[in-house]
Amino acid sequence: MRDALRSGLHAAATGRLARRLGRPGPRAVGLVATLCLLAAPPPAGTEPVAKVARIGVLVPGAAASPETKRAVEAFRRGLGEHGHQEGRTLLVEYRAADSKLERLPGLATELVRLKVDLIVAMTTPGARAAQGATATIPVVGSNMGDPVRDGLVASLGRPGGNVTGTTFLGPELVPKRLALLKEALPRASRVAVLWHAGAFSEPTMRDMRAEADASARALGLPLRFVEVRDAAELDRAFAAIARERADAVFLFPSAMLFTERRRLAALAATHRLPLLGNASEYAQAGALLAYGASVQDGHRRAAAYVDKILKGARPADLPVEQPTTFDLAINLKTARALGLTIAPAVLARADEVIR
Image (cartoon, rainbow, N blue to C red; front, top):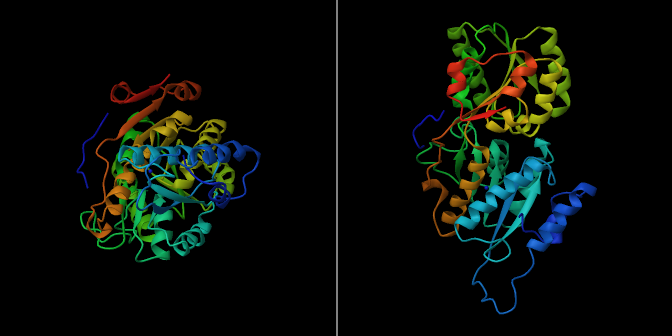
């Protein structure tokens, strides 16, 4: 099912850059070695580039995590589509927060001190950290939630400051996801909403909760909000949800929750709870349902902004790009394990069915 809406990121790194991602443990050695090889200087005889831009990339997850690798690879594909190659046409400084969002402001400040030409900040927390560290260096946010309500841009059409980029419309799609949940699970009467307090600004979180409440009331679907502040609280949260006999768990958008999606799916399975996420990767990890825009495509398309800004465009004049395609993914393996039957009308509209 694809809904059309209005239109509104290899890490090539030297050993020094790889070390700045954090001290790699045994699992990170292969990644670092690969990055160093990919960052080798161009072969002899290659014509020199007049100016090599230096950009910073700020990621919320761990440097060697599969999620970070996929996000960086998607961004690299986008760079290649615009004729850029790390180590040749640009140099990249990576900083990873290891899923500790409180580290992002300090990492953003490091990039500013390096006098990079541009900062790519993956997800809203990264973009907010970069914006707080500089008002002059261009910032390209990828997969931002609601950049207007979060104070990152003045408007989607005219950002007006030093921040622009892509949004995945996570908060705006909450009512649509609740309606899908009710349609797929018509007998559900108690739904727990798991939300991450640091995912967006306080106004965005407040508005998202209010919109969810209003939509749920119209659907006759009482909500119970369960807050977590970091991944360490997930076990406790699911235990509390299970005690209250919730019929399903609904996830608010969050970079941290997305990174922890396999753990979330495992916890939901342990407590025999249907889980609804906001990107197809959730269903692929074991959630019952997922609806939203492609996360990897948002990172890939952010590279177009890098290209335009390095060629002289101003972030203030580059509209924030909104996705136009949203996918519904259903995991029938999970449905069978839970003894559930997905309504045929919902199943017929799925873009991806995991059997």
